[in-house]
Image (cartoon, rainbow, N blue to C red; front, side, top):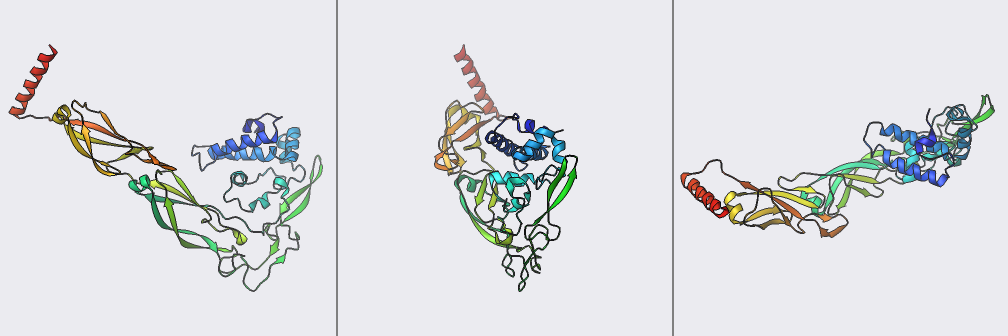
Length: 369
């Protein structure tokens, strides 16, 4: 059986503020959008369930006295738990802390924060829309302006986002009196307790209406929109850019969520990247490595000349300062470009070449002697 205090890593006497900090830390760590390890989502749900109980004074008191069995036994009008041990959506709980797409859906959470009696017929913030955008290596380094189309939910033109058929008027639900929830009594070994449940007649909306035929009562339809995005210098694969209020529009005329753009940077045929450092390689003949030379190498700024010092050893890394990637958020600060020097040694030599190398070997042996 789950120990909610142990799940959050706190003691039984922990204050609410400290418990809240513990939840925030763990929820960020195990959220399935961040943590892709097996079991992370299940752990995230356990953390959310534990905090939902321990952050509510009434539920915490029952849990401390009777344990998890007390919660499953229909203990005392606990709203969204419905007396069956069912918990609110853990992602709704997470969004209530961190924002983005939680909308007005908290109204269906029952006992959370005394919101159990609120119908779901008010405007709700729309969901965030997530898309992936591929850009070129050079565009990621110096930034760029991109345009692309996103298919998202817009307000229905026929019902103006209300979801109600034009020419008709919604009426208050006569079963829940517009509350969206009804109260029933449940008998338990500890006495009679109230349970709050979603109204079966209006589905929690609080009103009865004729749905719009165009959007089937949702108030929203899908269509494309052209988005302009300014990509800053220094981004990399996995970078996320947020475009405010360009996500799905909310239900019941609610404001839209955000558009979250995940970037994927295409590889370059010659250049590689590690953070703000650019890396590449150049191959020179062994004679140039011995005598020194100047070669032209590709950089993000174009072709530049690089001096190979005499006596350069295979695998030597030469640094071209400030020729790397601009730091994200500080484009005037740039990394370096590291060039690895490979030395080409011929597998076969002509007679003249062999004779010269042998002479060089004899001279070198004489010097060392």
